Image (cartoon, rainbow, N blue to C red; front, side, top):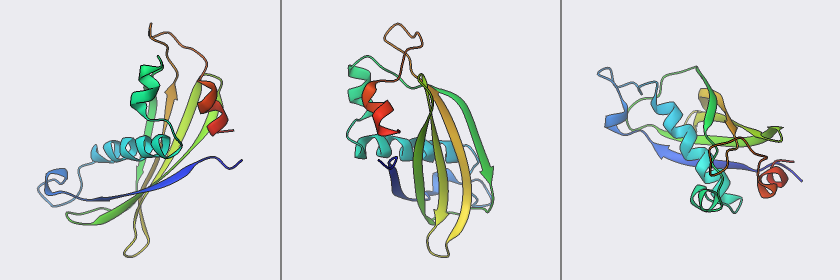
Length: 133
């Protein structure tokens, strides 16, 4: 079974840029979340459903490599994939690409721990482990 992968399209809004018209660096982490949420939803399990079943996946590590600037009104693709790191951790990998010229704008990753309703570490739900194995 191939781990899930998804592509999400976003268009850079004016509010996401700085005075120079370049995307503000923190917005890439917001786009990573958009891609991650879409990946889980496309795989059949939304964050809302996961939380209703008593699991959360807080970010415990985040990294982004900025390669080229994105600017106001650029259409971008968020390529998102995931893999198991351990029975209690999952990692998501991201690439932000401008499809117009196939430019890699940024790449990064986030690592998430699985917590139960009491905010204690727990094994990732079986459906998540199966999704990424």
